[in-house]
Length: 119
Image (cartoon, rainbow, N blue to C red):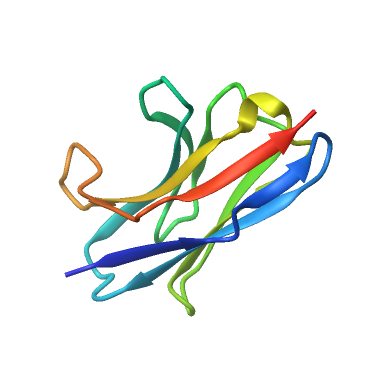
């Protein structure tokens, strides 16, 4: 069974950067896509970015395009989210999720990491 563990959150000022990481433990052969989602206070979880595990194809929410970059290191079973030019509205708990081959939804989640951006 795949387990996910996020790291790298923290408190930064607006305009600064953070790099989140998601360590994947367990079998990775059936991973299709890895994604980052976030949940702001009082809001539902929303999509941030995703990357296909084998091909590296990426997708981003409009709100983070040009500022965030998702990447993966298949040799280390880790997914990253480089976040630049952070804004106070990026404040949220960030979650790493896994979508399996032939699955329509993300079926495994990490525990989340808090990102707080002060103005």
